[in-house]
Length: 211
Length: 255
Image 1 (tube, rainbow over the protein chains, first blue to last red):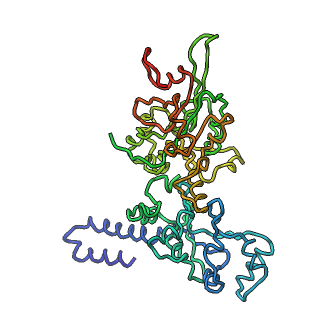
Image 2 (image 1 turned 90 degrees about the horizontal axis):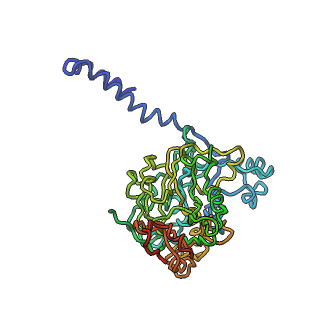
């Protein structure tokens, strides 16, 4: 709104005479639509959602010394299990272990009732994308890189390993997709990088990622 | 003419037409596997859609000599696909190891040049949005995307099964680019009760299909067009092989 006033007053004093009145409404309109397009609309289109339980990855990784793959497992047939079930959390959290009220809430509301938590996933891809977690392994990338497991995951996922609470989930109100989901240009950082060809099995062929 | 890549792996099919009884199990299996929705009017052949069609062939002779054969027709995954060179938006391409012609549905603008250029009629246009009767949507294959109205689709050699087979190999510590015979087969191959369809890597001598396509009675459809299909047919009957291409009346048939 400040921009708009500046602009119109600027044109009103000296611009009014030299360029005529015709350009003022155009400039005002431009500034208003830019403000709308850059700040107002992106806010309107996404609804903000928080995770049903405030989950701390930090406590699990640093406190309990766990690794990503202990909960986010790759199955024997090569598919990725994604998020752990309440039953697998209950392997440790069968009863309240700490003093965090969120943990107590998790145990009471989910473990004792056997309900699954409706976690919000930031990375869900559209229906036409095939992503293989098995293909993006430490073995493959660490032929040249020196990634730790959590660093490799954070190449695509939000870096939650060091945070005490999960980030806000932005859901597109029209499509239902998450704002934070990985875009094709992010995949192409590696897939269109010729240095990777021959070293890894990556290629930029359509059917490598699309279905 | 544009040049096409050569691949180390070449997924291919050998279909024995003498074993095919025309039962149509392959068509059903394909439809179920690849999320092809029930058609509003399946008898309208101008607007219905199948990735795999079984054609009936006949030698055209009267009763005592009358013979029929059935020919299942998936996408030929041509080595030099005419559909790829005509696509204005590169929605279809042949660039992945294995040589399967890809089709990216969100990229397709529905111009249907590829359908016009395909000599095998292997491509189909979605005239309708897919709808499944209540409850039947639960049978959808999760790894196959559903196509909207207005785009072209075709057989992908059950490409999702290829991806699954590679992932399984990776987890087991095997080389995903050296799958064993049978690790990856299409849905139609699996469904055929007579074993008429054999699927595998044509370039790999350890795969059964490698020898089958080199057999005396193996042929490909419209071979002389130069499309270099990856689907081979086998028939010991001369008249069946004759129907596989536009032979002149007195011309000798291959095989």
